[in-house]
Image (cartoon, rainbow, N blue to C red; front, side, top):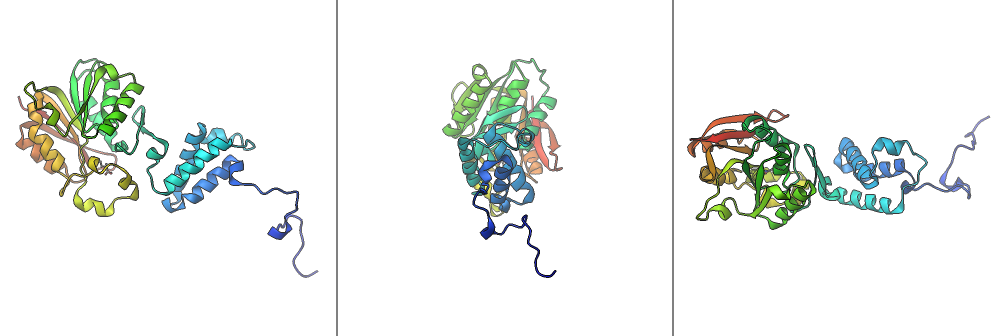
Length: 312
Ligand code: GLN
């Protein structure tokens, strides 16, 4: 027998029987996931998969494995709508934390939005460095300043570790401060924080100058040359939180130049720094009355944290 074999399992579009309904991606969890992955293909194979999975988990409030256990379930229309909108936003290269309005930082889940930088995993090391090196017992009563607090991630994480500490969370953006305030509220920390609108130390230079036992900062540190190679996602983040001037060091110059005035003798100053900036920041600290300068590497082997103490 010659010629193509006719088989009932072979379905050409013109052969779809009338009673057979075509499945839409929105009819199943797997369909949604594969559709999302395809929409995000430009992110690359791995990112498109992890992003589609994450957005589906967030939209449904279920983990991937929980969804996999109910293949026959039909996703609710409202949920599908949210997921489709989120995928479209992510496709525009909006950071996924802005898409969902949430970011995870150490043990915290924080509100984030375009007014503040998305907390990065490297910044968790800033908190770890303080916990390990600043010399405070977990129940110590002390006050610290988080300069450029953004979403409040660093200060909130520290306050949750040091249960009796108090923090001044300062930022030049009132919109960022509003987010930080809501995050403090979310963790019932409002009684231990003060939010201050301040361009570096501007708000603190009055006749009664505050002095803290500790200062932490993840200031803007991108240099002008970095902007040519940034990922599209970064352009959605506040420029003010990223732009460190021509060489990326202008915020460190301003902070190191004045920090000793606002720290008790022996008080710690902990910075996150950009790639390759540690030696310059170390020099700046040395020139401005700081000693015990210590550098910590992040998981990629990049010098990421520079800590120091104010000379007595
Ligand atoms: N870590 C950010 C980035 O490289 C920069 C953060 C900052 O400027 N403080 O994308």
